[in-house]
Image 1 (cartoon, rainbow, N blue to C red):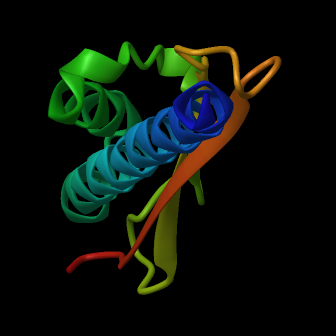
Image 2 (cartoon, rainbow, N blue to C red):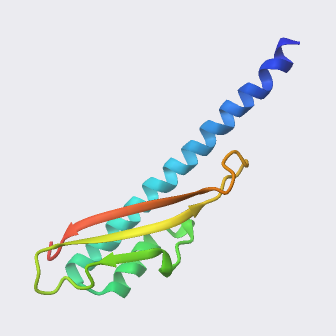
Length: 113
């Protein structure tokens, strides 16, 4: 009888840990992909190549080119910092997070680095 009362709570806790772990993993992967992309942009100042590099750094996420933004538009002739932001919608596997979450990965690097 006690197990029947405890089981739903235990399952909720275990599934919550799984969802949080998956979201944390995806966030870390997106941040790494943004770091790779902004590094490419800071060195070569070609936005298309930087976007492709970021997408290829995290192939399992299914990042679209529209999910990636870079500012400023060019690193030529400046020592300012370039920023790449990747946004991606996270869908819950268990339904514990209705509607999912929008995760953001950001990478910043000084131009010419």
